[in-house]
Image (cartoon, rainbow, N blue to C red; front, side):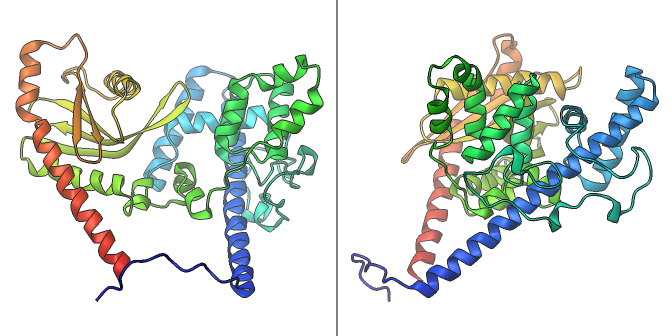
Length: 388
């Protein structure tokens, strides 16, 4: 029998507990920084090998493309994800942008043993937080405070001096990836140069609010998951209501028996160098079209619709075969007591085919009932666990 609910008693100070929590949090943070630093270094080394191989082809564009395509296919066969052609191009670009950052004791293109490869895992990691400078990089040339996501953002800055400035300030200010991107997009460097009080601007930039995500959340980063060969991000969010609903929605659509085949979950797309993930992708075997599904928690916005239309157009261009019918996008917007469904259909759809679409797609009422049913089951299960 559960105890009556009341005001929770204030936690008593416990120095021993606080010291142990501090030890665990610091240790987990060190693990995250070690993973990030090893990842950054590995990608730089991969980019180095790709550049050397392509240079052997004397700059022939077709040879370079073939090298990367073949390498992508073989690495994907072995590691399943993380080595698409686009990613390998990023590694190549990364090395070219920072080619003088690390000194390697063996020439490019030669066979190397693990002991010859610089290993950041054994070096002293910089303390997490603010106050570090670019001059206090690790002995391997890259700061343990910056992740691969940081460097992808930095690589979009073409001017070397400007790029180095943002790298230095990201370290000094403890910026996360979003803060770094916001500073770049708002021309922080250019504004600082024109400012009458540049020192004040720099001090303010280094004292922006810092949100330190828990180590477990940082390890959910898609790049980290790919690098470590762990399951995709969706598997780490099964306890979250949104992800749980997606899981059941996937099963629901397959059980409809209307000809849908499951294609992908958390399908990665790169739109204008921004990484996006479509929750679910299905293919209709009879009508030959893709169905993209995104679940939004909260009220449906025009931005959600515009984003889905972008997904639809991009999917048609990248994945649909010539004899496939146009892709359909479905946005499910969950409110507290209702579910709103919005099908994204481009204006050039033929009306006859659109009517066939609607015969095989679930109705808004079916979707509403299914999502509400799963929501109640999940919330009831959570409440039961909370009372144990």
